[in-house]
Image (cartoon, rainbow, N blue to C red; front, side, top):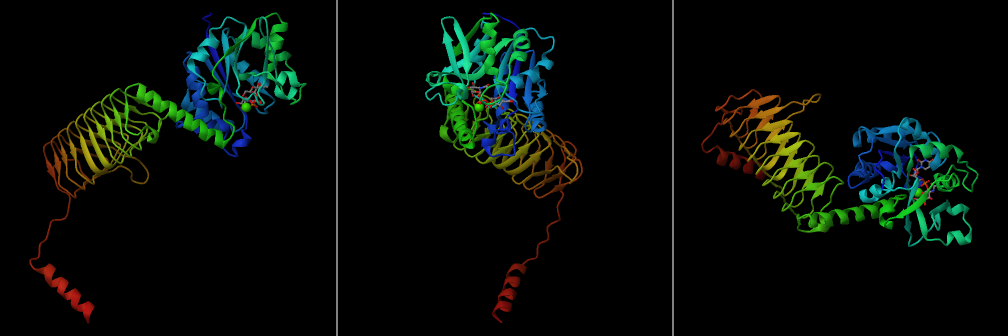
Length: 446
Ligand code: UD1
Ligand code: CA
């Protein structure tokens, strides 16, 4: 075991032509997050000093996505994809002065487990390769082992029949000291069947230089790479199955697990209840004991203990529900904080708003937050009562304990304790309804 500082290199320059896509492969989403985000998240668990993503195809898009997924990660550009060793070499300048362990991961391999990476990072050998026993070794690189560890890796294209019979294969993930990479990578040539600079030449060359080279193995499922849309769909199914099982194990009630969809970072507390057909986009936390009723869509939001949401509610990024908040059917909430005990029962849009404690928002209320150019805020105080069908034309403030009359269009601030009415005064004409109907029927009959 060693405890050296860690750096991460994530290879993500390949085109992924079998995806049949204009989008770089690593930006296709799994569990609501681009594939490369899964590798980055697993790698982050090692608290690396430096993270470098090697981008090539669609580099600008990859760079943009990485900036949101992991703002501290750096990008190395590999203009031409000349092979995995060439890709790693492009990252080395960004590791100048780094003297620890370097882990190389693939951006299209999302299931690699944190424990497996930990095992590689702390392994005592100079070069350590992650392998697995393949059910079908297919076109994977073959790991040729001997009495003292890994002797070399032979790519499928370059392997003879006997070597192809080996079932222990290369996952692509490996770890080596930065100094080893700096020394050996320049020795790797491209005289092979593919004409590429193979990272898989590293073990053989390292051994020739007198270094210790070994294999650790993991479950094949961890090394699953995504190359086609069908594989992406299968990976999504595997991801969801795992997330559902984990939620159940963590003490979350899922009424119908197969209909609940999770994101990579969904976080749900014990004793929360999730109804049928609920979709979690990225960035959701639901505290213990909250209830999400069927057919809700949540993304980038927080639901506190005791809150109930739905059925048929949509919580968008920046929705913060305090304790015991009730959000009912056909309610959409975006970038709004609802303090404890707020009730928004029906058919409402709250955007860019703050609602104080225990306030009741009547059916059909809309914060008119967008004027076609900019967004504006609505402030509603505690213990207020917003009448049904109130239009709150932002920027606007409704004070504590204030009321608005049903059907009001509120364009001016309402002070604390005041009642505001912003609607046409009612006119009543006795008997006119009956007379009008008679006149209309007569006209139709004639
Ligand atoms: C590679 C390994 C093989 C292993 C397999 C596991 C080599 C030579 N072979 O083969 O032993 O069994 O992975 O899946 O390493 N990439 C770049 N730049 C490049 C080339 C590749 O960034 O110039 C990236 C790709 O985007 C991909 C990863 O490296 O994420 C692997 O490349 P790929 O071409 O898929 O390698 P394989 O042929 O599958
Ligand atoms: Ca591959």
